[in-house]
Length: 402
Ligand code: ADP
Ligand code: ASP
Ligand code: MG
Image 1 (cartoon, protein in one colour):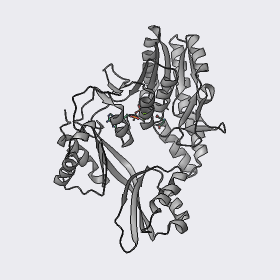
Image 2 (cartoon, protein in one colour):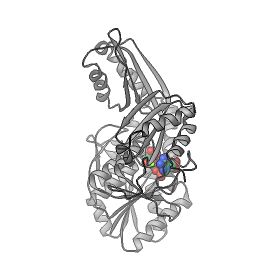
Image 3 (spheres, rainbow, N blue to C red):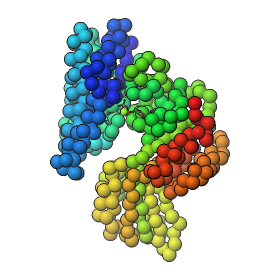
Image 4 (cartoon, rainbow, N blue to C red):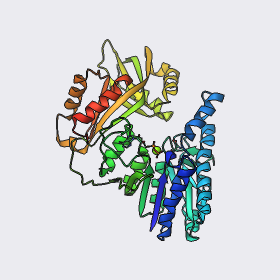
């Protein structure tokens, strides 16, 4: 049996936790399993690297950021191998170069393309525990890339798929996937199971417990995931194709506090304008989310949309560069908008779910700025200062509380 076990930053934050993880992995190893471990950087080390970089250059080149980021994961894998060796088990740490994990070239937001499994297999055959750096890859220029914040989950799932692992376990600092972030919503309930689709929406909409691409990849390759705590032995949450839970209308509520909003005012009201706007952003690899287009008046219209945290400056710059082609009056932008979403496969067949969410917010006297929906989710943009109250009220209104 081959198991891939991924541990996040808090789980390897200090010497005691590193030994705790080492022992958990050795337990599996001693059962005769092949064990591949994926690690994140220790504690908040990636955030510290960002502060260090920004202190030197407020807008550091993305290539150099990735070069810097990779040391975080390299440090934790090397220390983990040392801990396992100290405990009498032979282990080897490998980075993205040594494994050869190829990605697309986009620094800071690369996608995994191909993983060579040969080196890992050779090490496993020598009965070593193999510890691999999460989050990093290499592109066609042989430069380091990273997979986006939280990307170690994706490394783990990709390795599990490439190695045809029997299980992929994501260990973190909470007991599993909850109906909402348990740190924000004290009454949140742990889910026994959740479908890939629901989890994908939750993670894309702000539930940081899993990197959204890890869920996308798990679905694509049919890798069942289990999310559980590195600090206890409770069972955790299974993420799979068909979840056999009592079908709730809404399975979870997610909050993203870092959305930024851009409004382009006074665009020409003619065919092709939306295409031109989003095409120039796509060419810069800028992800756009909730989009709202106003009804045209006096030959002009407005388009507003949200972009992920950290992309606002590049978005506004790109639009300004294309001012000639797009022809608009002005751009307005706003940062730190809260994006609150409810997700649930049960919504498809039940009208009135969105109305209930809006009513709940109305009862709390919370104003909605923008709305977007799909078959299995409803998203609203609200003021950040309303976010805590809103997520708790909506969570409770749908009967999710424990
Ligand atoms: P790791 O370092 O292990 O990858 P993360 O901080 O990336 O850990 O993810 C775990 C965190 O995700 C939890 O501490 C929790 O605050 C947050 N979280 C957000 N939404 C949820 C949710 N629906 N269920 C569980 N945890 C959630
Ligand atoms: N260390 C990286 C981050 O903090 C990757 C990860 O933790 O998954 O985003
Ligand atoms: Mg994470």
